Length: 505
Image (cartoon, rainbow, N blue to C red; front, side, top):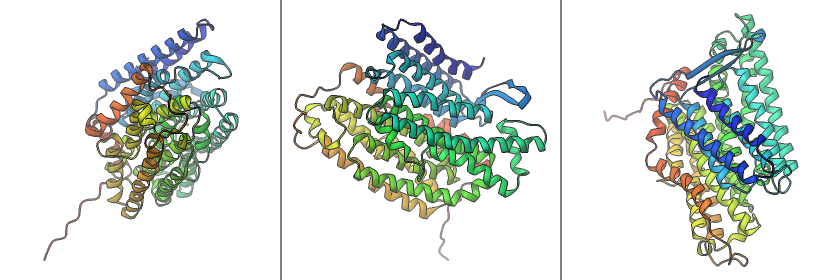
């Protein structure tokens, strides 16, 4: 077993330990879950340390026959982009467990099932980013739906059943389209050698596929990833899911699972269908810009704090998608860094919002007036998270958003300029709720709210620390990302546009 297999198995071992633990001892269940996620996080950090930053090829490679009759393999490997997203997954998991210590209460199946689902989901997240066999990727891609469906439907609030079903139907629809494209690739590979699902072998098929075939297969993958991301107009499942899910589930849903969509665009759409990617890039850039503005306008009008965060994420994913298809190394690096930074800023927003809601028994923004006087630590935590979502200079999201806009401007200046208007709208959708919830007179009912306790402070502290540190010093992550991002762009046949100079004659 290689590093990636061990990393993926550790959460399952923790889930097994929880399964055999006494059902009556909920504290032991929670302790096992926290210990497991901490061990996995440490293992993820050690894996990152062992990674050769300058090498653009896949590392920690492992390949074994799984279903030889169909050429299906258990094949794993990561480049810098995949590694950063695995690191994001394993770092957020213990924070979610600690922050949502009591989230399983009120659920249909109790604490044991909740944490088994959570740890199983962590294994799926690691697997989906590490897979290099397209069929194995599809298995992890679809398998992730199961724990998320039960986490929303079994432990959420409000219209949780409807939200879980809507999430499942949208995702299954996209998954079926992707499966059709995977089968198409499999058939074509058989006609041009031997049947395979290996991504390296399948990437060579673009040279023999007709433009029409490549375009159709591309759409099967892209629509599935656009739903998962989500990109306008395939976004409508997200606000309902985010509003109904527990804060911890929402962190993993928006912080990690949605990144599978944008990661898939890089790893599969660009790699397998380079010509189709170029064909559809103008349309995708338009959809991305619409997502940026549309999500921002929805966020401005939001009255529910969870829906507000979901709408802001639609806007952020527009920036990420635009950066991916701008086909410049700066924008590609910015998009990947944006995925990581968005994961932490969204985690901070959802976790603090969850604590606010649990204390106030309301998710309406107007009900949280004057929190800065009553609960200063909670209020300042929400403020910093909001400023990161706003991409304030000095906080992590600024660097990634700047790279995306600068990298896009060199190739698509009109799109970059229009998207910049989204920054202006971000000031509105963050600063207005901050003013309503944190400042002004104390809203009746808030006078006796308690501030963050020690456990909650310990949970939010590393999230805030990452947001601040990466705002001033993003270099460690960019050293991992930049070589892989530049390689992806070069593989598409692009080079960064050279700067132009006007000379006086």
